Length: 246
Ligand SMILES: [Zn+2]
Image (tube, rainbow, N blue to C red; front, side):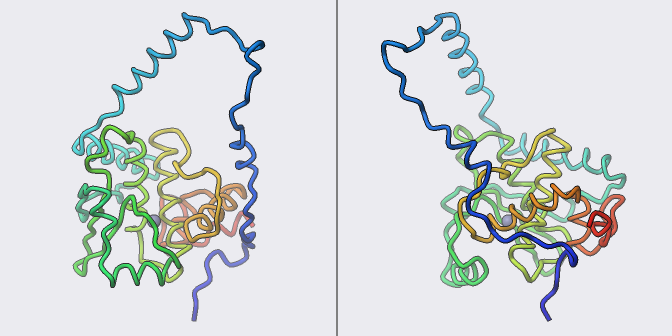
């Protein structure tokens, strides 16, 4: 029998047109050259300076990111009131984007079956038979073009897949990972997940994000979502606590 997640909660089906898309539709305006604003040179210098400052902040090392990720897990442990989030049973390995996206025929077929498409991977989470995990992070050699926070988000996402069991539903499995990613970035970085951005198709990942958004809007926290999807307490939340918000 197929498992039902969040019984009693009616998920809206996918709506391709989202409010956020409208906000993002701010295409560049064409300004009549006669009416164009003059550029304040002071401003220009400030802008160039702040951009170059940003550039010098971008490079990161794998060890720095791993250290910061562990720091993040510790801050989440403080937040939820126990010390269950560790990397003791996990190996985190950085690989290049080419390596993480090189799939064998069998892996390609498995992805096609589960996601109905071939997805470009940023990270992956493998469960070993002995209960340990291998988290692959596909950003080796990308130090100049990706920010540390992007990597932390992907690490948190893959870590989320390692919580509880793998769910039979690909959408709810992704929802579990996105919920943890969002929880991590919200608590540790005080901002929303990388992915709460416009959704343009109805693939598994976008549907999972759309579901996450609906649950959060109803006041069902990431912790309650994780507790439900892992079927075990998470922080102060029990697996069925989400239903208090229905
Ligand atoms: Zn995922």
